[in-house]
Length: 500
Image (cartoon, rainbow, N blue to C red):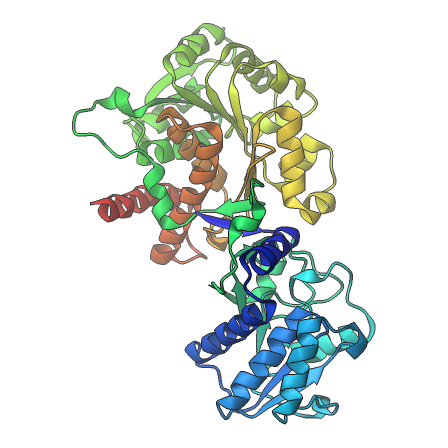
């Protein structure tokens, strides 16, 4: 597990390290500069001619220290100071004095030169306003050079809290960040501007957060070991019974993909509740699943109640359509089921305007909207949601007393208090059926006994890793949702091998 911080929390950690632990700010600055230098060498950048662009704050001080260290190595380095000397932090003023004592003086005619590397040490995480005027022109100049751009801590112009572009922003090839990755480096569009991100420890500790929760967290491969291992003495009931209420006429594929994913994720038994017209195709494609079918005109309630009583967890929505029948079935499930439930796709669409059902249900609910579904569910505009994904997801989770999985290139999972940001997955997953696969994975993990928040966050991570594995086999252009579902087993196999 890796904690992700916002700007305020990072400053709190930094301040605690300096004031309470007693590591001087200048020492941290020197360590930061040394870390950036080492990564520049490790990445084998062409250091024939380096320009370090510095601002007035401590990010600029990091840049000045870096320029001196490079100069000591014999690198041809120039410094461009783009701040105001009167506004310099104490540490940056001292770093500027040291540079001048070493014969490194800021140049004013750097615009006419070409460089192999440009280091962006303008603003770092402290920026909270839009870049305009001469600074915006400088950023545009940096972005139009052929040089490799290295950003110190965070590309200038990116909000450390949301990833939003504050007017304009430096587009880096490499970002060396300190202590923790920041939210703005993970969330889009900021993630696109960071290039390769390397996190370096420089002595800053998390003790300064005291009892406050980190803003968010993300997972690493070893976290998959939280999924319960298989036991030698076990049976199919040990690994959960999952009910998937899915499919409609000509939409059997959604039910198949969700059920296949649940099977590949380790469920002991998977039951599909679907119209009779889907029987032949589902029994042909997935004979391992149990089927309970109904004719649309018959009374389906008795069969559904039996299925709900059988299940340890359920998922509803994929491929069901948005008619009155789907609405009636969802109403029935929410008012009868008392176990963990995933609501996806058409289940979410018919829920719009009826969210009071979520406050009336005894089920522990996970909602899995993509951005379009979130606009309908929340009543918020698309741009408003994209402006701050974490805020939008958190407010919806709090209002509905659910776990919200807001699906995007960086999926957010939250129960309103805790936030998981997903970093696995790729563009090949932007294809029909991927969401159905996720529903199956989440239902499986719930059936195996995970809490809704843990199942949602770990399930989203596993879903993305399966996408990465499928892309390694098929390429991002050609992978399909069925291959994504099959890849779930491959990811879990790798986890089992690491566990041996």
